[in-house]
Image (tube, rainbow, N blue to C red; front, side):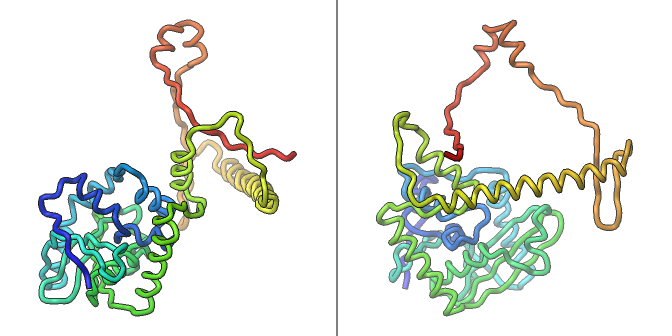
Length: 309
């Protein structure tokens, strides 16, 4: 049902290039529109770009470093044994589906996904809940490998450890395959960018793809009147709601007077004095132009504005 591609001995760059050749587990939630930290447009950019770009922040570093710890806690809690795979899997029927799994369960037709969450995001995993994009990741691995069970284990830093068992679901997995197939054949293969979804990372992708401006370029605006009218309505509503929010804030400040904090059983409010130091760049430019020139940098970006005709 699948082919195994050895990953032992691969350089990190080779491994990243291998991941670009299909939809992986960490891509599946985004392709389905369920990942709050990614989007179909971002997956498209990752798979179709010439280079390899990897998220490398503190959260990713902690997750990688603690993967073995989470696996150990899972073995301790479940009584099961797990091992590393050292392979990347590719589904033979759907070769655009690949899987780079954390662990395989010894003696059981199952795998294990290890997760680490911060205490700040603990509510997303409270009461045994699994974020949808994590769940889709596990079902993606089942779809690729054919394994009937997948476990997901999570350490919430400084708070708790929990794990769940997910069983094969014919309907869900078939729907997942269809969504990924449509995305791969409808976007990746022909090079057609997916529609934006309003997320910040879509802004980032659009700014990256269309960074440069043709100064004399002009296109006729066709088919957007309805959306632009809706945009104006949204801005009016935002302005109204922001004024309402500001009034509530002001009422609370009037109630607090000179007190720094206010609290009850439901809310904690702070109105603190904050000292801020800013560089007076205007004065620096006037009095020390040579220093100003040495320590300023010009960046280029595009500004989006909408005006009524």
